Length: 261
Image 1: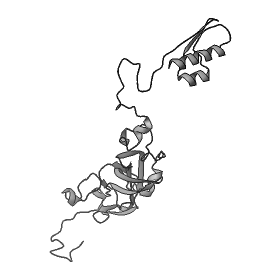
Image 2: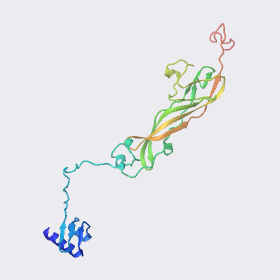
Image 3: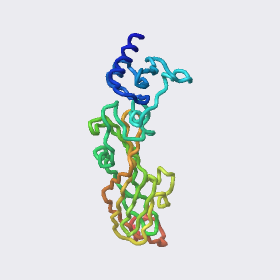
Image 4: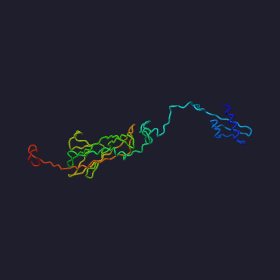
């Protein structure tokens, strides 16, 4: 080590041409020879070389060695689904470190969309003016697996809203799925969360659109996709009749040939 320092000092004496103040600028050869950058003082008659060097594996800190188990994760590392859950991901996720997945939109998920449901009304797609007609349009959560952007994915659609157009110029938005009077434990022609009252007889074309929220699972939990997917049902014609009462001597069961039977 002493021979090496003396050689470096002689080398510095050769490359320093004239007196100069102390310098910490190293020639590449010096840095390569010593492995560190010394302070050089030159008064024209002698050359002083001083410096410090930290060997690998040691530390100048008085706080002791750093914790080998501590690590600060980058946003991309946090987002990798092999490291943490996607719900807390600050950037778009990667799958097992294999590339970044493009931003997922509802348009990308249309291939996984649930099929339209059937709209109907009871009783038998008919009703009575000024009395509730009960509409039935029920949907449930729909889950499907497949591939998206070359990655395996599971997609889940959950119904969040039902938008009715009753065909008489009125509409309504509800969150409840349509259920029959029997399922609800109610008598016919009583109000339900999805019933509607027509004020005049006639034939009406009713329609229903169901709105779904969407989520994707890339292997480590559900990740929500912005927006809602709307899927309309086929239109349904509903015949509305008028009801009239009359005082009769016998019921139709008792006398089937009576007027009105």
